Image (cartoon, rainbow, N blue to C red; front, side, top):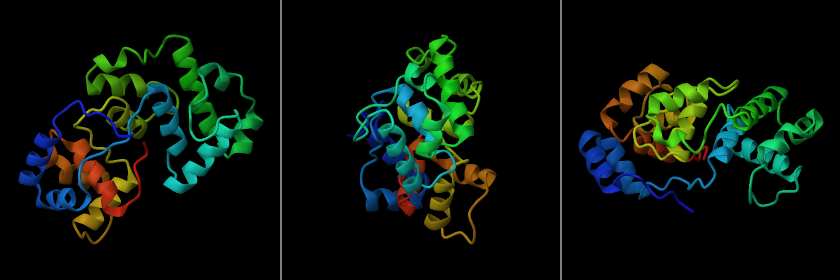
Length: 213
């Protein structure tokens, strides 16, 4: 199921085609922008932690084992905050979730349970404020905040320069001699604004890494 967009895809395509012929070619090659739908904001935040610094296939394997440890099959739901807080260290370890990531997942659950993170109200905040609130949580960095903005909140103008898949996509699409640095990637994506989320999605497509959502 794809995400119901909160902005005009047609307007995004017009802008990107006019601003950057490389992205325009990717739009023609890969078709419509179709980010995965997110029906649970907490799930998106937890999933981003699991996928941090991992290739898609490895992350999906760990995700399946971790969900199975709660008796969850076929990605039908994610554990609740209380399930996470009550999970012993061995449950995370046996699923392939590192000790560090387990602490991050627990930190998110604690923030929600204690009311320090209001997922129901965060959608009313601007991008910078959302990022500020999320990165105040132990283990939630810029990359996770960007994934949340793009896929849970459907924000159109996010450029996750910390994502290797996006930068590898730029290397391939623009035929660069090496993978661009985050600052170089930021410069490349500047012309995409105010639809940098859409341009980024096509960079993932360019190398078929799959999106983290």
